[in-house]
Amino acid sequence: MKILLVEDNDSLRQIVEEHMSRAGFVVDTVADGEDAIEATRRVDYDGMILDLGLPSLDGMKVLQRIRLDRDRALPVIIMTARDDVGDRIAGLNTGADDYVVKPFDILELEARLRAVLRRPGSRASEMIEIGNVLVDFGGNDVRIGGLSMDLARRELILLQELARIFPGVVAKDSLEDKLYTHDEFVTANAVEAVVSRLRKKLLAVNADIGISTVRGIGYRLLKGAERELD
Ligand code: CA
Image 1: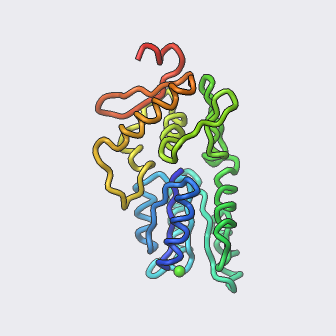
Image 2 (image 1 turned 180 degrees about the vertical axis):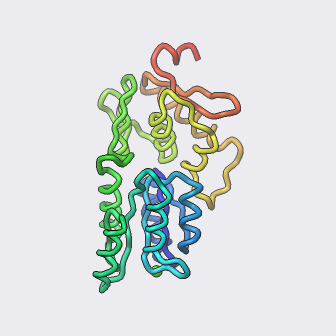
């Protein structure tokens, strides 16, 4: 899953980014409010961690603008200063899903993020079953006949994105957005390389699904007999 982290404090931003990346998220980071709004218009994030005290445009205004902008509810966790009970209440009233108070334990932030991502109506509450493959978004897991597949972070995200749209086609551009942060240099065949590794793993565990390349557009999942023909 891809999240946006908005924090102007460099060291805190780095700590949260590193932790969440290790925890399996693809993390875009920005340090101010205008950039945050710009980023949510460009990329379809699964969730957001938002500091309220930001230079120029503060976090509360960012939250207001995002809630006005988007039809789908983007899960948002706000980070607030210790003494600002008023901020926390205002944040929740403005549409934040949860909050942490600084200084917080990074594991608590991760747990709260996962909890809001799992809530009914959010994308991460879904489970999708295609043939013998179960894609569990909340558990961040893929199981074949009950056994978890051993997938690298980008392989898992790729499979989630394809499963979400199945049997539709996912554009290669939008996969690049989901698999890489905006700071990463993405080579022309980067997504293809992840697809290729995932294909091999699906074959190795006798999954009922395969991945088809739709030339010039992107990729789609194929199921069962259709897969044999591809
Ligand atoms: Ca701040």
